[in-house]
Length: 98
Image (cartoon, rainbow, N blue to C red; front, side):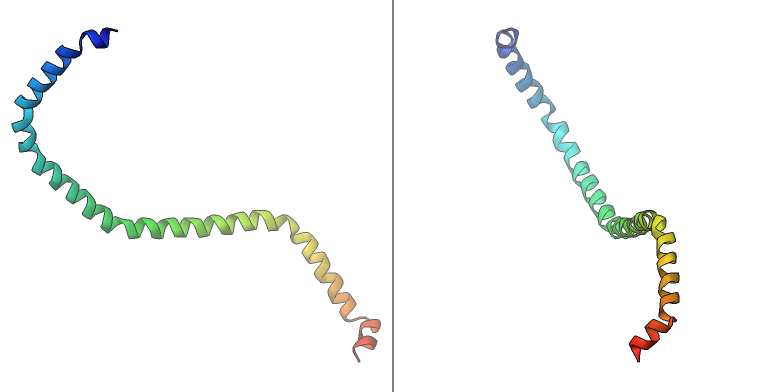
């Protein structure tokens, strides 16, 4: 209810300050456009380096995750390799091959 009671005063003072501050806003506008242009050019120059660093980080993270998941399985792989070596050189395997 208070907002509705003060609405005419807020409109009046808002319009008055808007009209009085308009020249200052027009004075500041070119500097804001210049600031935007400088930030945009810097962003375009830096963006390829950021993307490259992100890609390198993702590759390193993928390698780390795969090592963390596969490293506990390494003893089983070594045992399977040893069994394969032993069975490959056995007489039964030689007789089947030829």
